[in-house]
Image (tube, rainbow, N blue to C red; front, side, top):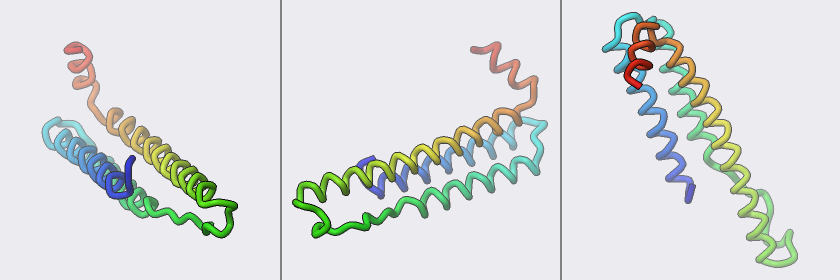
Length: 118
């Protein structure tokens, strides 16, 4: 991602889309367990809150700690790249877990119909 604002937008968009998809499927397809739907919406909300709160990173070094400004900039870029990659990896893992749970909630008849169409 280019900057923190774009990362936060992506997290909001992904979580909003997952919650909307889950709620629309629960409303349109009979056989969904309402307690599990509420639990998953809570997990999605928690994912969004945690993702947004972990978007702020602080590089704890100063330019005086390095031999040159070029070394400082390289170290700072590497730190931010690693931090954003770790955030993306953690978020992706939780999104995949939530999607697997959402798919497991589908009734078998709906799964068979989807497989027949594909």
